[in-house]
Image (cartoon, rainbow, N blue to C red; front, side, top):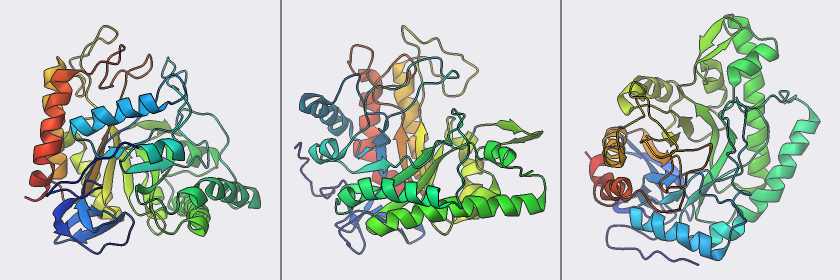
Length: 371
C-alpha cells in the first residue's frame, strides 16, 4: 500500500485540521458557519480536488497504481474521481475505454479517498438503451443485486466517500420517450414521480448494504443543450432536481466552461435543491500533437502554462463559493478519445500545467475556501 503521511495541517485523509466537526469514522457533509464541507472520518473539513479516468490500457498492476499515486500525491490531489469503465460512442469518435474499472484491490492499495460509480442503468446521453421500468420488481431486483455485490464489500471502508450512479443521464430524452412533455405541468409532475421512484429504489438498495457512505447520485451534464420534442433544455430539468432531493446527499455536476459561465446555473441548482455541489468533471485543453484548439471555445487555452493558470483561476473562483465542496479534473491520461489528460501519450506529465495545479492544491485550497 502507498501510505501518505499526515502533517500538522492535514489529517491522514487530507482534511484541514483547523476545521473541526464530529468524527463518525466515515465521510459525510455538513454546513459549518455558512460553508459546506465534506467531513473526513477523523472529523475535519475536506474539499475534494480529484482526478477522473485514472485508468490504463491493460489490467492494473501494483507498478501502475504506484505510478498513479506518486503523481497524484506530488500534484496535491486528494481524491480518486470516477474511474469506472466507460464506453466509446459514435459521437466521441474514438475509443474511450481503457481498462476494467477500479475495484477494491486498487482502492485498498491507494491511500486516497475515492468515489465509486454503481452502474444501475444505461441511461447516459450517449447510449440508446430503453429507459427501465423503475416501478417493476425486475428493476428493484437488479439494483439490489448490484448494491449487494459492491456495497456489502465497501461498506466499512473509511476512504470511500460515497457512490455515483449514472454518468450524464439524458433526462429530457427519457421524458420524451416515456411520453412526458416537459412543457406541461401535469407531465412534469408525473415525470417527477417516475424520477423519484428511480432515485428511491437505488437509495433503498444501497442503504440495505451500506448506511455509512454518501450518495452522490447521477453525474448531471450541466451545460449540455438538449433539443427534445421542440424543447431546448440542459441535462437537469427542475422536476428531476426536485425528485432527487430526499434521497441524494450531494448534487454532482459535469460542466465544461469557465466558472463565471456556469456560476449562475450552479447557484440556481444549489438554491433549488439545497444540496452542496461537487463539480464532477471538467477541464481545460491546450494544443498537442493530436489536438488543435479552437480559440472561440472557452475551455481551450494556448499552451500548458495557460492551462495551469486556467486551473488556478477556476479553482479560486469555485472554492470561494460556500456550496462547492469539490472539483474533479478530466482526466489523468490522454487517449484517442480523451485529450484533456495531465500526461501525454508517452505517459510524461505536462510539467508546466501540473506544477501550477500543485501550487493551488497544496498552498491555496483551504486559504481560498476560508475567505
